[in-house]
Amino acid sequence: MLLAGLFAGALFLGLLVGDWVYFIRLTPDAVRYGCRVASRPDQWSGSTVESIRDRFGPDGVLMLPHGVAWWYSDLSQIAIRPQYRLFSRKFRTAWPVKGLIHVSPHDEALVTHCVKRIPWSSALITAIWFAVVLLGSLTFVVQYALEGGFTTLGGAFLGIGITGLAGMVALFGIVTVTLSYRLEDSRLMQVYDELHAAITSPKGS
Image (cartoon, rainbow, N blue to C red):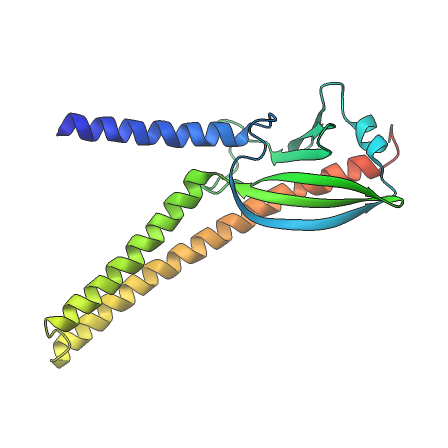
Protein backbone atom coordinates (compact mmCIF):
# COMPACT_ATOMS: atom_id res chain seq x y z
CA MET A 1 0.00 0.00 0.00
CA LEU A 2 2.85 2.35 0.88
CA LEU A 3 4.64 1.56 -2.38
CA ALA A 4 1.46 2.24 -4.33
CA GLY A 5 1.10 5.60 -2.62
CA LEU A 6 4.73 6.49 -3.32
CA PHE A 7 4.33 5.46 -6.95
CA ALA A 8 1.15 7.52 -7.30
CA GLY A 9 2.87 10.52 -5.72
CA ALA A 10 5.89 10.20 -8.00
CA LEU A 11 3.62 9.83 -11.04
CA PHE A 12 1.62 12.90 -10.05
CA LEU A 13 4.80 14.94 -9.50
CA GLY A 14 6.18 13.77 -12.84
CA LEU A 15 3.01 14.76 -14.67
CA LEU A 16 3.02 18.14 -12.93
CA VAL A 17 6.65 18.87 -13.84
CA GLY A 18 6.13 17.59 -17.39
CA ASP A 19 3.09 19.82 -17.81
CA TRP A 20 5.00 22.92 -16.72
CA VAL A 21 8.09 22.09 -18.80
CA TYR A 22 5.99 21.57 -21.92
CA PHE A 23 3.95 24.69 -21.16
CA ILE A 24 6.91 27.09 -21.11
CA ARG A 25 8.28 25.79 -24.41
CA LEU A 26 7.63 28.00 -27.43
CA THR A 27 8.09 25.38 -30.12
CA PRO A 28 5.39 25.01 -32.81
CA ASP A 29 4.05 21.83 -31.19
CA ALA A 30 3.73 23.40 -27.74
CA VAL A 31 2.78 27.01 -28.46
CA ARG A 32 -0.98 26.31 -28.28
CA TYR A 33 -0.68 24.08 -25.21
CA GLY A 34 -2.44 25.22 -22.05
CA CYS A 35 -5.83 26.22 -20.70
CA ARG A 36 -7.21 29.36 -22.35
CA VAL A 37 -8.16 31.93 -19.72
CA ALA A 38 -8.42 35.28 -21.53
CA SER A 39 -7.74 37.17 -24.74
CA ARG A 40 -6.85 40.71 -25.72
CA PRO A 41 -7.64 42.28 -29.11
CA ASP A 42 -5.44 45.16 -30.19
CA GLN A 43 -4.21 47.14 -33.19
CA TRP A 44 -0.61 48.10 -33.91
CA SER A 45 -0.69 51.24 -36.03
CA GLY A 46 2.13 51.81 -38.49
CA SER A 47 3.28 48.18 -38.32
CA THR A 48 3.45 45.58 -41.06
CA VAL A 49 4.32 41.92 -41.32
CA GLU A 50 7.62 42.98 -42.91
CA SER A 51 8.47 45.09 -39.86
CA ILE A 52 7.92 42.02 -37.67
CA ARG A 53 10.24 39.94 -39.84
CA ASP A 54 12.91 42.64 -39.63
CA ARG A 55 12.83 42.64 -35.84
CA PHE A 56 13.21 38.89 -35.37
CA GLY A 57 16.44 37.04 -35.98
CA PRO A 58 16.92 34.28 -38.54
CA ASP A 59 15.73 31.73 -35.99
CA GLY A 60 12.54 33.72 -35.35
CA VAL A 61 13.45 34.52 -31.73
CA LEU A 62 13.47 38.00 -30.18
CA MET A 63 14.86 38.41 -26.67
CA LEU A 64 13.13 41.15 -24.69
CA PRO A 65 14.12 42.77 -21.37
CA HIS A 66 11.61 40.69 -19.38
CA GLY A 67 10.75 37.82 -21.69
CA VAL A 68 11.06 36.18 -25.07
CA ALA A 69 9.03 36.26 -28.29
CA TRP A 70 8.94 33.69 -31.10
CA TRP A 71 7.68 34.56 -34.60
CA TYR A 72 6.00 31.88 -36.73
CA SER A 73 5.98 33.39 -40.20
CA ASP A 74 4.01 30.57 -41.82
CA LEU A 75 1.22 30.99 -39.23
CA SER A 76 1.43 34.79 -38.76
CA GLN A 77 1.60 34.26 -35.01
CA ILE A 78 3.90 35.42 -32.21
CA ALA A 79 4.31 33.43 -28.99
CA ILE A 80 5.40 35.38 -25.89
CA ARG A 81 6.16 34.51 -22.30
CA PRO A 82 8.04 36.04 -19.37
CA GLN A 83 11.44 34.65 -18.50
CA TYR A 84 11.31 31.79 -16.00
CA ARG A 85 14.72 31.64 -14.35
CA LEU A 86 15.57 28.73 -12.07
CA PHE A 87 16.00 29.82 -8.45
CA SER A 88 15.00 33.35 -9.38
CA ARG A 89 14.53 35.76 -6.51
CA LYS A 90 11.35 37.05 -8.06
CA PHE A 91 8.20 35.58 -6.60
CA ARG A 92 6.54 33.01 -8.86
CA THR A 93 3.00 31.74 -8.51
CA ALA A 94 1.36 28.46 -9.52
CA TRP A 95 -0.50 30.19 -12.37
CA PRO A 96 2.10 31.29 -14.97
CA VAL A 97 0.65 32.89 -18.10
CA LYS A 98 1.90 32.83 -21.70
CA GLY A 99 0.40 34.39 -24.81
CA LEU A 100 -0.08 33.62 -28.49
CA ILE A 101 -0.60 36.69 -30.66
CA HIS A 102 -2.52 36.18 -33.91
CA VAL A 103 -1.46 38.82 -36.44
CA SER A 104 -3.37 39.96 -39.54
CA PRO A 105 -2.68 43.05 -41.73
CA HIS A 106 -5.38 45.70 -42.03
CA ASP A 107 -4.80 48.90 -44.03
CA GLU A 108 -1.65 50.50 -42.56
CA ALA A 109 -1.81 48.60 -39.28
CA LEU A 110 -1.75 45.12 -37.81
CA VAL A 111 -4.79 43.69 -36.08
CA THR A 112 -3.63 41.47 -33.22
CA HIS A 113 -5.42 39.09 -30.90
CA CYS A 114 -3.45 37.79 -27.91
CA VAL A 115 -4.74 34.51 -26.40
CA LYS A 116 -3.58 33.92 -22.82
CA ARG A 117 -3.08 30.45 -21.37
CA ILE A 118 -2.06 28.82 -18.08
CA PRO A 119 -0.82 25.24 -17.50
CA TRP A 120 -3.50 22.56 -17.51
CA SER A 121 -2.25 21.26 -14.16
CA SER A 122 -2.76 24.68 -12.56
CA ALA A 123 -6.30 24.92 -13.93
CA LEU A 124 -7.25 21.36 -12.92
CA ILE A 125 -5.77 21.51 -9.43
CA THR A 126 -7.49 24.85 -8.80
CA ALA A 127 -10.84 23.50 -10.01
CA ILE A 128 -10.48 20.32 -7.93
CA TRP A 129 -9.57 22.32 -4.82
CA PHE A 130 -12.62 24.58 -5.11
CA ALA A 131 -14.85 21.58 -5.86
CA VAL A 132 -13.63 19.76 -2.74
CA VAL A 133 -14.17 22.82 -0.54
CA LEU A 134 -17.62 23.65 -1.90
CA LEU A 135 -18.94 20.09 -2.15
CA GLY A 136 -17.47 19.18 1.24
CA SER A 137 -19.11 22.20 2.86
CA LEU A 138 -22.46 21.47 1.19
CA THR A 139 -22.32 17.82 2.22
CA PHE A 140 -21.58 18.76 5.81
CA VAL A 141 -24.47 21.24 5.98
CA VAL A 142 -26.95 18.74 4.52
CA GLN A 143 -25.86 15.86 6.78
CA TYR A 144 -25.73 18.12 9.81
CA ALA A 145 -29.26 19.34 9.12
CA LEU A 146 -30.60 15.81 8.55
CA GLU A 147 -29.12 14.69 11.86
CA GLY A 148 -30.90 17.53 13.64
CA GLY A 149 -27.83 19.64 14.28
CA PHE A 150 -29.75 22.88 13.77
CA THR A 151 -32.56 21.97 16.18
CA THR A 152 -30.75 23.40 19.19
CA LEU A 153 -29.29 26.88 19.63
CA GLY A 154 -25.81 25.56 20.36
CA GLY A 155 -25.94 23.19 17.41
CA ALA A 156 -27.13 25.97 15.12
CA PHE A 157 -24.24 28.21 16.19
CA LEU A 158 -21.79 25.35 15.63
CA GLY A 159 -23.17 24.62 12.16
CA ILE A 160 -23.13 28.29 11.17
CA GLY A 161 -19.59 28.67 12.49
CA ILE A 162 -18.23 25.70 10.53
CA THR A 163 -20.07 26.84 7.40
CA GLY A 164 -18.66 30.33 7.81
CA LEU A 165 -15.17 28.90 8.23
CA ALA A 166 -15.54 26.94 4.99
CA GLY A 167 -16.74 30.11 3.28
CA MET A 168 -13.67 31.99 4.52
CA VAL A 169 -11.42 29.22 3.17
CA ALA A 170 -13.12 29.43 -0.23
CA LEU A 171 -12.89 33.25 -0.19
CA PHE A 172 -9.19 33.05 0.67
CA GLY A 173 -8.70 30.72 -2.30
CA ILE A 174 -10.53 33.09 -4.64
CA VAL A 175 -8.44 36.05 -3.47
CA THR A 176 -5.21 34.05 -3.83
CA VAL A 177 -6.02 32.90 -7.37
CA THR A 178 -7.18 36.37 -8.43
CA LEU A 179 -4.12 38.19 -7.11
CA SER A 180 -1.74 35.56 -8.49
CA TYR A 181 -3.33 35.70 -11.93
CA ARG A 182 -3.18 39.50 -11.96
CA LEU A 183 0.50 39.36 -11.02
CA GLU A 184 1.36 36.86 -13.76
CA ASP A 185 -0.84 38.67 -16.29
CA SER A 186 0.95 41.95 -15.56
CA ARG A 187 4.26 40.21 -16.25
CA LEU A 188 2.96 38.89 -19.56
CA MET A 189 1.56 42.29 -20.54
CA GLN A 190 4.94 43.84 -19.75
CA VAL A 191 6.49 41.49 -22.31
CA TYR A 192 3.64 42.30 -24.71
CA ASP A 193 4.30 46.04 -24.40
CA GLU A 194 8.04 45.49 -24.88
CA LEU A 195 7.35 43.51 -28.05
CA HIS A 196 4.97 46.18 -29.33
CA ALA A 197 7.56 48.88 -28.68
CA ALA A 198 10.31 46.87 -30.37
CA ILE A 199 8.23 46.36 -33.53
CA THR A 200 6.85 49.88 -33.83
CA SER A 201 10.08 51.76 -33.01
CA PRO A 202 12.51 52.63 -35.85
CA LYS A 203 15.07 49.92 -36.43
CA GLY A 204 18.40 50.63 -34.80
CA SER A 205 16.93 52.82 -32.07
